[in-house]
Length: 256
Figure 1 (cartoon, rainbow, N blue to C red):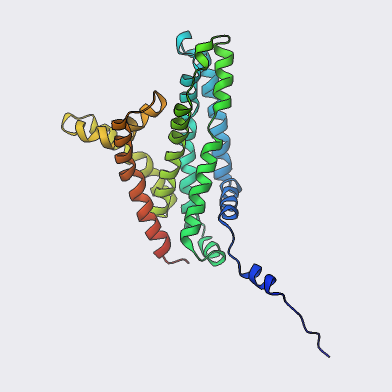
Figure 2: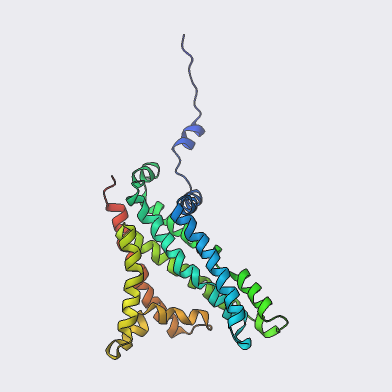
């Protein structure tokens, strides 16, 4: 005698349902801390941030000990270290041969890449050390009302300043699908272009394509229309192109 198993239509739909984008993003965030490299890079970011805030509090002149100034210093470790985490988040899928498992569970590779981008944005925003900067200002320059002035627009620019390098890092990781070359080129190419941009014949294009020049105003003042146009041009080259090439490679590359 056999026993019939009745499966409800709702259970069938649930079994075949795709995981939501929020769930995929949470999984990618967890991947950032599951590896020793990712964990220690995050620890190094926190430690360096605390260190630079303390040093800035003592080293800056009294008139420079403002919330804006210390905040601009506090976010620097995140913009340097965290893009490496973004690169590893993508490239390690191929170097550690986990891409087959990932794309078996989630066949839509575009959704996986979008989840990685969202996870990088979330991590970058968490790393925005407003609290640490405020603490540094409070200790270094207590009781000075002007030192606490910071417009909402400038806060948004600082947040964007932290998020953009992470997205660029994910783009480089997706474009090259190999950790070492992606990390090296991520640092070498913009640095090399900045050096070439100091030459007089390349001075004009460097004002539109040098990340160091176009992103620096984001920490200083409310940006003008021309400054936003220069930033958009820079991002088209250094962020959009790697992301598009990376999307093509991620969706087309053979998984082994």
